[in-house]
Length: 168
Image (cartoon, rainbow, N blue to C red; front, side, top):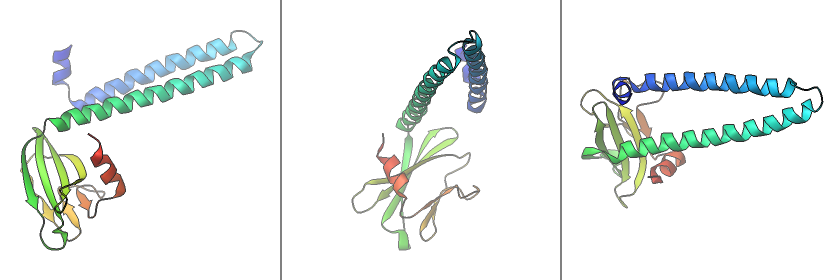
């Protein structure tokens, strides 16, 4: 089984996992409808109780999923290697960028303030070629081929970027 998981691309694994989750959800919903409709008396109370139980279970699963995804990302970021710093020039001279390789197709980008040396932002992105960072006024461009506003980091970083950078 582990050998099959190693060969399967990451996106295919999540697709299959989502398929299993949808099938399990359909089974649970069918069971809940059966339990509510089994006896005529007390249907409303049983339906309300099942709704509360389902809500708490869904919230618990979302919490567990968030922890798993975050832990996986943190574990991956901990394996960063071959790091290189690129100081900014011109208007962005208050910042320095650092990029590290994670695995064969992923790069970790970190943005630091040159004064305090504090980590201000962190991004992970896919890159198949050499890393090319460029400072464009108030923007750090790390993936010029990206669309929809991805591939660049506005300077100064947003509050969200600064808060996420503080997490391990």
